[in-house]
Length: 189
Image 1 (tube, helix red, strand yellow):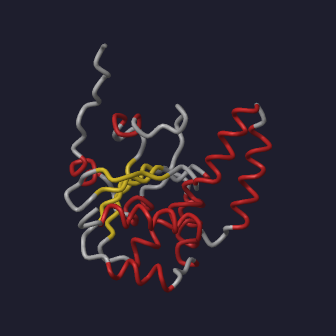
Image 2: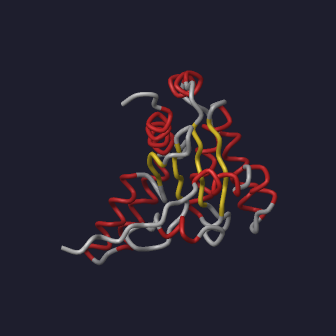
């Protein structure tokens, strides 16, 4: 039986260090209206008390690499939630990279074979990959996959838009992200 191909090892710490902070990433943005919108959304978001408590209780750092570009609607919608968690979590460190900055990294995180952003990669304190999220919440990804399966992606996108409207405060997204943060911060199984 032939051996499966082995992907090259990625130096996650190096990729993380090559990224930009949120403020530097915004300043380098291509679509100023989208950058302003993201910043306004981030400032509007608030965390539930349990979310703040969980972030405050983290004793180990979590590194997150965000593959994101400001022209993308899903990036504009979801980056503010990620950044709000990082703002309120002293042990949450996020760096932003573009798809073309590390094509070897982006190629590992295609969505059903397609290029979709944002992608958030969660790393342990020692830069071990612990999970990823994106480009949209789990329920939305499932809807798009079902739309592709039955040949009606426009109807699926309409349902995704309805879910986005129902979650305008990004609660679903932030809860999914918090689960990955908890995993990456774990000090034992």
